[in-house]
Amino acid sequence: FYTGANAKAIIDAVASAPRNPATITAADLTGYAARPRDAVCTSYRQYRVCGMGPPSSGATTVFGILGMLEGFDMQAMGRDNPMSWHVLGEAMQLAYADRELYLGDADFVDVPVKGLLDKAYLAGRAQLISPYRAAGSYLPVKPPGAPERSKPAPAQEEGPTPFVAVDRAGNVANYTSTIESVFGSHLVANGYFLNNELTDFDHSPVSARDGALAANRVAPGKRPLSSMSPTIVYGPDGKVVLAVGSAGGKRIIMHVTKTLIGVLDWGLTAQEAINLPNIYFGRAGLLLEDDDAGKAMAEKMKAFGYSPVPTDLGSKLNAVERVGDVWRGAADPRGPGSAAVDDAPPQG
Image (cartoon, rainbow, N blue to C red):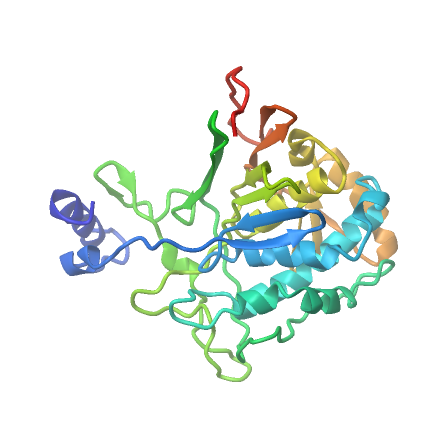
């Protein structure tokens, strides 16, 4: 892929781009290698959860949110209680604040993964969450072992593709890939689109506030930060009970998190959890999906001091769950795609 005719097709496509033509050399391509990365794992209640570590921000942010919610009885509050969605929204914004400050390519910067998932640290973050009122301000703090960092300008991605699969032996594959924006750079080589992943780096290498370097600044050979969040959940017996992933740019983290809460805390099927309204945030404040369920919950959440904005928060969630001796698939009704299964019982 990185040599010969295919490499030349990539080089030529970039050099002849109608906008911003640039130079990629044969040495650039032959010098690239995909790198195996260790999974990031932690506990959530009686479960073990594992996900994708840096340069993805998926596992640290999803698990950061879950860690803050461990101090709340999400099961007792339930899915129809606006307080459940309120504390989820508060934990979300605190975890994203940490994400923006500390996450990047661990080959180039010190990413405090252990500190961000430290149970005492997350319990301290959870103390900032009032069950009755939105904080309105969500600032990062320094987890154990973290270096000094500067807050970058925000960026967005929109083009990931996820799928989840399990075979008869119980082997689970949870895959998320992205070319960044929809159709990537819009350049084509050998019949496939080239990505525009440079937009996943911070727009400025330094903070306008203090001039310090950002963790996700661009550098030669550096991988950009992503939000891909393929997650595998193990039950107390050590067997996989759920695997879920999604598309949706930086919203991926929240699409996956609300699905995990739906299954693990609210006892929903994976399909029911996927169907729950999506939640996110933006400059306008808290965002809830622009559907009947999201609008109804947004109205209830005004009591916590929000002015929730119904918004198109499209997702492409996919999941498999283990129910007794069978695997059951689930696909997001918000877009094309479906779950397929044979009738053979799992062996693993």
